[in-house]
Each structure stands twice: as structure tokens, then as C-alpha cells.
Image 1 (spheres, rainbow, N blue to C red):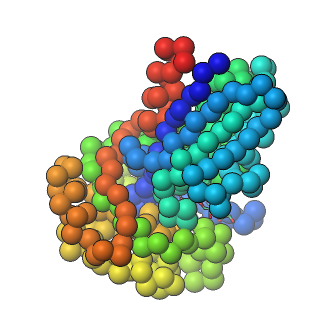
Image 2 (image 1 turned 60 degrees about the horizontal axis):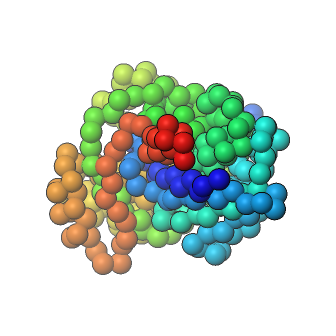
Length: 285
Ligand SMILES: C[C@](O)(CO)[C@H](O)COP(=O)(O)OP(=O)(O)OC[C@H]1O[C@@H](n2ccc(N)nc2=O)[C@H](O)[C@@H]1O
Ligand SMILES: Nc1ncnc2c1ncn2[C@@H]1O[C@H](COP(=O)(O)OP(=O)(O)OP(=O)(O)O)[C@@H](O)[C@H]1O
């Protein structure tokens, strides 16, 4: 059987409202997930020795606690035709950036192995398995830019306006758990209606706290603010600005301070992982 290579796209939270802390320690939130056409890449190569192996361009991410391995082990019991797999992750996205890199890698693994192992699970079933591994995984499994509620698993797909994004990585690797458990996090933003979420008045509730804890995040956001209204994604640390076309995005990106990395990406409504998998299935690869 041939190798299957699929993308694992990044996401941005166009806004992130935290409504309350729940009994289970998680938080109910409202957000819009914007998928991007930029991300990591995974290659799945069936092997003959019945083993699941994982290697990564970033050696420090190798090991059984990577979300890719966790996703593979979660799916293994559902395999109707199990064979060993060598999984290689080409890691492009910064970890701890609030752009969902690890979650997207896990989702792409679920999608790929559902096909290769003939699990035949539905998107609902895959999203439920993903949810157990991380709150951000269901949106990548379903593969549509969406309005989200609950912990991020109640999804309403949305056709977002076509935009380009300048994403800056201040490079400080923010822990999601640390921000959600911080005593100064604001957790009482009133619930809004979906329609309202595309107007003015939205925010990222984690941003003031993260900017206070990590001055590099504030510095990057203030720099981008010269060109429009920039915002932080997720629990940080990346900040972004949307513009109408690629040329404008590239022109702004090229002027960034030399010590700040990042990328320019197109916003998409359908995940490139889901699109590529459909193509691979249709062409029998
Ligand atoms: C901030 C977001 O990226 C927004 O999209 C997500 O809500 C985070 O999703 P994630 O990284 O997949 O999060 P998980 O791996 O499930 O959880 C990491 C940590 O964040 C906390 N957490 C996460 C999501 C949520 N709605 N409430 C939480 O309190 C959990 O207690 C956990 O300790
Ligand atoms: N495949 C993976 N890629 C990156 N990090 C991973 C992966 N699997 C597990 N991790 C662990 O998860 C942590 C967070 O990485 P990730 O890139 O998912 O964060 P994030 O972009 O802040 O995510 P989110 O937007 O979901 O909060 C890393 O520090 C790393 O220890």
C-alpha cells in the first residue's frame, strides 16, 4: 500500500469569549474558528511489522505523549483492517502558539487512519474521540471554519469572508492550562448570538492576561496594530491581522521586526486536510 500525505492546517480564533468555568474545570466559551491554508504535514506509510511508529522533524516532539500517537492509539480499537503505520510529522507550526498545531496533527491522524484502517467511523464519532484528546480537535476533524460553543465542540459551520492573515509568533510558548487556570482570567463574558459575533464588540478574553504575563505578545500586537486591528489567537502567543489580499499581507509581513517570526496565510472555509483526503480516496491513493 502507498504512503498517504495530508496537511494539518492551523486555525485562528477570530475572537474568544470565556463565559464560565464549569464543574469539570473546563470553560464554556464562544469563538469563531478560522481555518488557514498553512500548517504541518503528515505522511502515513503502512509497514509490515504491526507497529505504530512516530518520527518528527522536531526530535523533541517524538514519543508516545505526542497527540499524533495518542490519536493513533485511540483509533486502533476501531480498526477493521489493522496494519502497522510509520507516521512522519513535518512540524512547521510553532507549539504553544494558539494556532492549534498539535490538535490539527491529531485530527489529521484520526482522518487518515480512519481511512487506512477501514474504521468507517462517521465525522461525529471521530470528533467525539478527538474531543477526549483535546477541545480544539473536533473543529479540525469536521474541517469547516465554524462558530463554536461548549468547550469548542458544539460547532456551526460558517462561510467566512475571504481574507488573508498576517500571523506573528512572539516565540514565548504559552501553556493553555496555565492561562485557563490563572486567577486573573476573566470568565464572565455574556453569551452572544451567532449573528452578533461577526460585528464589532468581540474580543479575546485571554489577551489582557497573556499580554501582562508576556510582554513580547503585547509588543507584537502593538506593532501589527499600526496596520489595522490586531488580536491574539486562543491562549496565545500568536497575534494576527486580517487584510483583503495577499500583496497587502506580504508587504506588512516583510516590514516586521527582525526578531519576530511568523507567516502569511489565506483563510479557508474548508480544511485542506479534508479536501486532500477526499481527493486521495477518489483517486484510490
Ligand atoms: C483556547 C483554545 O485553543 C480555543 O480554541 C482551546 O479552548 C484550547 O483547546 P486545547 O488546546 O485543545 O485544550 P485542551 O488540551 O483540551 O486543554 C488544555 C487545558 O486548558 C483547559 N481548558 C481547555 C479548553 C476549555 N474550553 N477550557 C479549559 O479550561 C483545560 O483545563 C486543560 O487544562
Ligand atoms: N503534534 C504536536 N505538535 C505540537 N505540540 C504537541 C504535539 N503533540 C503534543 N504536543 C504538546 O502540546 C503542547 C501545545 O502545543 P500546540 O501546538 O497544540 O499548542 P497551541 O497552538 O497553543 O494549541 P491550542 O491552540 O490548541 O491551544 C506542546 O507544548 C507539546 O508539548
